[in-house]
Length: 253
Image (cartoon, rainbow, N blue to C red; front, top):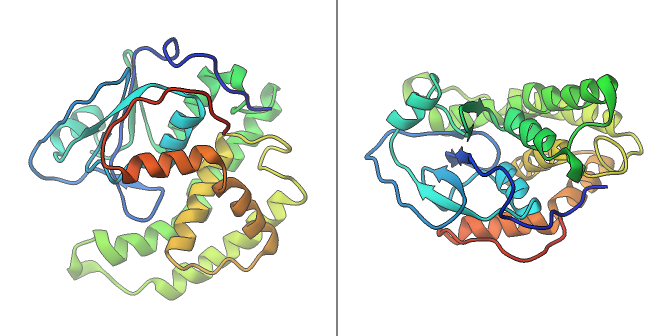
């Protein structure tokens, strides 16, 4: 079972997370512009292109683990390129360690905070199972969502093409695969909620926002189960508030 932590003050004292703009949900990228860093109180740092656009994947983990944190608005790419050669965010900094990519950050934080039950099942088999889910989520399930997003909003207009039908076809195939993978499980790793479900649920929310068809009762029920968790509601409320606030008090994820 995933458990709450007792205090927000003693966990990961040297961590900051650099976040970027999210169109829909899920994938983040730092955009160019004028540097503007606005500091707010908090032991942990979340950087965003705009405070209203913070990736819900990592914010849900923040709220689940009851961190005290601050948000930072950043409208410049140079800092991200200094931390990540691709210039993309999110970026997690833990002391001298830099971790990029939402899935990798989720796994790292889940492992570092393993006693709270968000990581892999025990042993090498458990690690392989979680890695398989994470790779499926980002390499397969997310790919058509990201492809459509790039051609709709992000790529230069001269190279955009209509990938809508192909993206819909690919996504439908991956939903069938997700249906088979889930089987009769409540969550990806079995009966307990984990970081895998944070990632998959976020993609489900992204797909629904993008009006991708999800023609699987099992998958829709699973997405409902994950997306209705209080930690996600808190993450979305925090992002939409466009301001930083410290998180105190006890909650259920």
